[in-house]
Length: 276
Image (cartoon, rainbow, N blue to C red; front, side, top):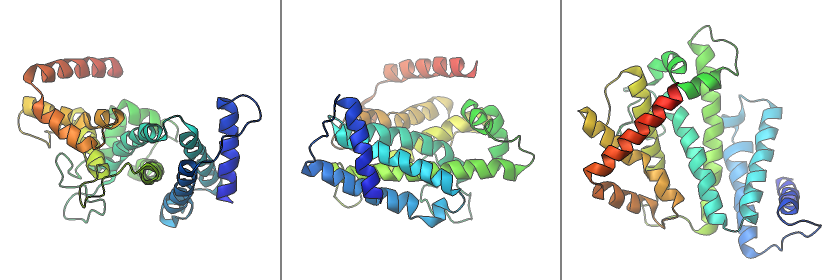
């Protein structure tokens, strides 16, 4: 059923790209994208009861159709590999916004494996109610729900959005295999380091809003430098580097003080505009 719906969506997408009744010829690459996309959606969403059990059938169906539509768009794009990367970056950025909010501090277990990596502490969960008031993005997110009366009223929407973002992210993560956009060397693939870097950057921003010390480095200047290094990972992914993690390390390590200063001034100006 999913495969049939997926092909119908490809026809719809193709009609928008190529006027008329023509349907794109199904080549081997497109077949691989469709097959992996179908498997990814089933694995990460429709067949993952632990993720979907808290959602209504209507919401599950809505996201299933949206996911299939995105897979179809990737399959019919002129550069499927980069189309998938662009969507993956968007998903990871949203995932990180919620991921760092749901990680438990020590001594609790951390099934994500992220806690303890540079800049990721598990300390933000205790400040969730304050953060949804201070952070513009979280305020707007929570505005779609009833005014919270307690911690559970905040936790439930945040955890729900995290589950959805996690599923979306891993659909596009799995889709990378259709283009061999992975590093098969053991322990050297770039996806997990990318997620960790984006989480560290997001936690840094949240900690600043809360007036908490940086978890990246002692001293404002060094903390900013390390935070900016984390934020540059997504740029390396979008630039199409074969191994974004390698390019990221080379770029971060080779940056000079002036580049940091320019980036700091720019980001501070952007943050000032956002907070207005």
